[in-house]
Image (cartoon, rainbow, N blue to C red):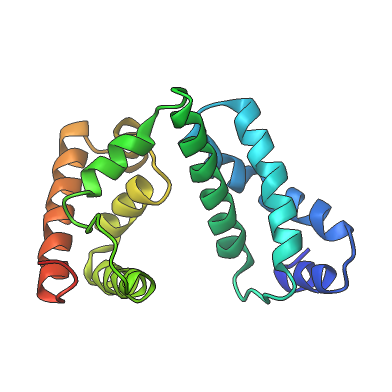
Length: 186
């Protein structure tokens, strides 16, 4: 079933929308969640929460890109679950490593204009990503959006781990320079 029809089912409050979403995007969402949580049961719980959150979000939202919309929901819920598990001294995986790597590029402290600044950072990062070569952009997104391990990225792009690490380091350096030039960070 195409995305427009699935969204229409949500708008009509037809419960088959959830089944169609699971069929079409279940594996996609599971891979997002697994990259963050590394635990089958936690991933399954997060997927159930993803379907419920999607049901509650459509309407009022009318996503133009359903896969991105659902992927963002799943990623957010997986990160929330990971934070909760980390607070309980469980979890692990690539999430903390990936976030630590980005820490030098993105400001940590929040100001009174938090929402505006977050939007400005997101827009600036989007602009930056558009300047990258396709492979650099894909490697960056795999690492910092999907939290793929260095090993998985290296295998996917047929790079050595050393090359992958160097590419990510150089891209982070470029991002930092871009954010400084844009006035997002000092």
